[in-house]
Every structure is written in C-alpha cells, then in structure tokens.
Amino acid sequence: MEATLRQLADLVEATVRGDPATLIHGVAGIQQARPGELALLADARYHRYLATTGASALLVGGDFDVSATPLPLLLAGNPGQAMDTIAAHLCPARPAPEPGIHPTALVAPDAAIGSGVAIGAYCVVESGASLGDGTVLRPFVFVGRGVRIGSRCLLHPRAVVLDGCVLGDRVTLHSGAVIGADGFGYETRDGLHHKLTQRGIVELGNDVEIGANSTVDRARYGRTFVGAGTKIDNLVMVAHNDVIGEHCLLIGQCGIAGSTALGHHVVVAAQAGLVGHIEVGDGAIIGAQAGVTKSVPAGLVVLGSPAQDIQKERRSLALHQNLPELARRLRELGKAVEQLQEKVERLGTAATNDSEAR
Image 1: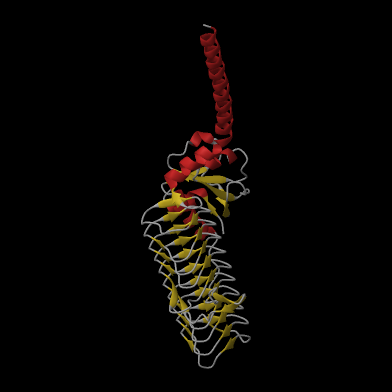
Image 2 (image 1 turned 30 degrees about the vertical axis):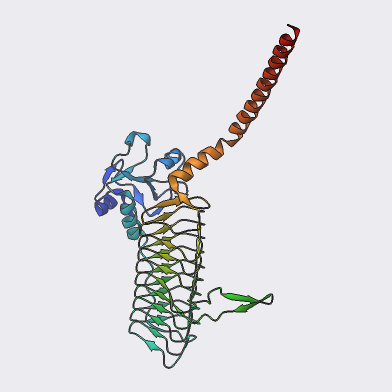
C-alpha cells in the first residue's frame, strides 16, 4: 500500500512541509530508510543522520527546525503515536489464523476448546487443558495437563505452558517462552544435590506479555505470580515463588531470584539481578546491570552493584573516573610530606648542634 504525504497528514492530523504529493509506501528508521519510505525523527541524537538518510520524507515534532533539511516533512504533535498510526495504515497486520484445529495437532479428547480458537500445526494440548474463546496457538505450541488459558491469548511457535499453570485473558507468549518449568531448588546432603519437588504453578494475569526465550518458573508450593499488564522482555528469568505486581516492566536479560516480591509499576532494566527473599516497592526503578542485594523502598531509583540510590551511585562513578588523577596527586602529596619531614629533621638536627656548640 502507498499514500501521498498529504493523505498521511490527514490521517494523523499533521502539517506538511514540502511536496504533499510525495509518495510513501513504507516506514523505516532514519539510518536504514530508503527512497519511498518515511522515517521518524523524534530524538535530537539522530539529527546527525539528516544529511545521509535515504528516506523520502521525515516525520518530526511540531517544534522541529524545518530549515535543517530539504526533505519533505510531516510535523505532528505526537510523532511517535503518529508513526504507529501510519505504519499500521501502510503495513497492515497479517490476518489472524482461521479458527479450527490443524490435522497434525494433538488435542486431548477432554480438553475444553472455546469458540473461535485456532490451533496450528503440530501443537499439543494435553488432558484437562482449557483454551478460552478466540485464543490462538501457532505451530509447535505445547500446553500441558490441566492448563487454563483465557480468551484471546496468542502463543507463538514453540511457546510452552506446563502442567497446571494458568494464563489470564489476552496473554501473549513469544517463541521459546517457558511457563512452569521447575524452580531451581536442591538440598545438599553428603556432597550430593537432592532435588526439591516443585509442586506449585505459575499464574499470569490479564494482558501479560512474555518475550522470546524468557522463563517463569513454577513455585515450590503455591504459585509464582505475574500481575495484570506486566510486560517481560526477551531472555528474562523469573524464579520460583516470585510475585510480580501489575504493570511492571522487566527488560532483557534481567533475573529475579526466588521468593522476591515486586510492587506495581516497577521497572527492572537490562541485565539487572535481584537476590531472593527481598521486596521492591511500588514504582521503584532498578537501573541497568544493578545488583540488588536488599529490599528497595517504593519510588526509589537504584543503580550499581551493590545497588544504591542513583544519586549516590552517580557520585561514586564520577569519583571512580577520577581515581587515576587522585592516585597521582596522592603520590605527589606523599612525596611532599616526606620532603617536609626530611627538612624538619635537618632543621632539628641543626638546632641541636647549634645548642651544643654554645
């Protein structure tokens, strides 16, 4: 599909600067854009690509300096939202799979399948499982015994939901996500590691999204819980008996050890690690690569390892950058003190000799 810049401006209530007849057939990042594509420029850090972009037009904010480029422009009040609308218009989503069960799927006779459910090729739905209305299982999905999946969920290829786990409505599992693997629990006796049986489940609230190759382990007892609206990135580890509050963001490669509780609207940034048996209060933010070893109060932003208040950590980082210079100055001061001590000793010796001579 293609549209003129004028048509796109009307679609998103934007203003055109330049040729309104410019044809656009797709969208792309400003660095990768080619002729015929519209690129978003909403961050000043990307202004350096203005001279080299291959885009036919740019989507910018209303305060953009239009003299900065000869390219045609769309000026929008909310460029990010406008870009989403234009992308959806030019590149509509693929149609949903037709309801029905593929001939190669293995669905237990006693599984409860709601209306409008689509089960793709080579899926497995085991005994006692239930799928709510409109749920889609793409090829190679595994749904274990007694699993309950709500309505309008989407499970991408090779997602796994193991026995007894519960998914709310409109849950999305991306490829390789595993819900309900055993928690990591062992007891060491006589030098041998004996497995502790993990008898609990995982429960995901409504509108939860789990990224590719992320894992949420089942509880030893009870449940591991992820609250409604929480979004989990790729390659994230949520351990057994964790409780993740509503509308949290867990970003790539972060890990949360067992029996830790997060409040609502908590952000855990990339590669951060949280020890077990602590609490993170509502609205707290855990910075990238932070190592959290104790509970974090609500609303606090922490960084570093061990994690501390971000302002203290920034001061520590600044001092760390100055350590070579501080070490050099310390050595110089040490030499100066030694020279002063030698001078004092010489003066003392001279005074003593003078006194004895008298």
